[in-house]
Image 1 (cartoon, rainbow, N blue to C red):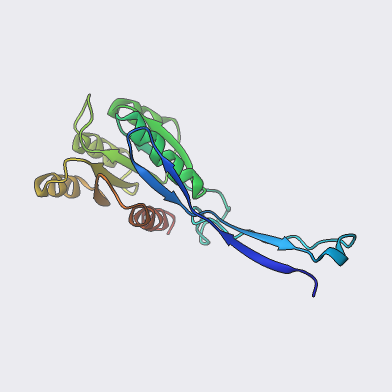
Image 2 (cartoon, rainbow, N blue to C red):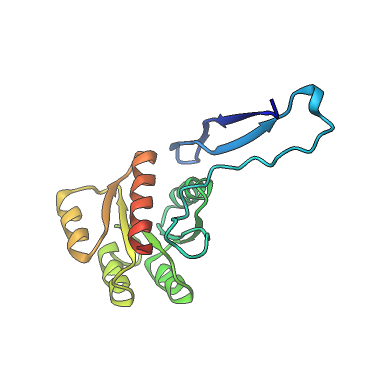
Amino acid sequence: MDGARLMLEWSIVAAITAGLLFTFRPRQSVSVKPEHQKGEEQKESSASVPDATVASREAATPASILIIDDEAAIRESLATLLEMEGYEVESAETGEQGLARLGDRPFDLVLLEFALPDRNGAEVLRDIRDRDPQLSVIMITAYGTVENAVTAMQAGATNFIQKPWDNEKLLADVRAAVARRWA
């Protein structure tokens, strides 16, 4: 036998300053060689492809995501979660900072807090829609009322997620939104 491939999957639980817990499951292939074959050339193992790229995109570049949230712990925890999945992430603390970043470069998805200190997230969403009607925007908020959800969806949100969120669902929503953007 040339070597045994061993798929390792592990969970790393990270406690974030705000007390939020996230479970990350990075995937990696490892090639293991028996002791008697140590001098021989080893075939490279193929790491599993992170969900941050979509096959239909010409270049295999990671999707770019902008997080707009006034809470540093939320921005950091979302960035960590998304970066562990292979996404390229930038963040902004206010709606105006987020709109400025959107003016600097293109993004594939925006994660937008509904209640920002400088502007209402629905207002920021309308400005985003004026600039790029096809850009996917997922609203994230601790104020998950039906009224806020309706307001966000009417303003053009792709989805509306309440804090605290389920990581697997959030990642599934992110993948779906990026896939729509790249389609």
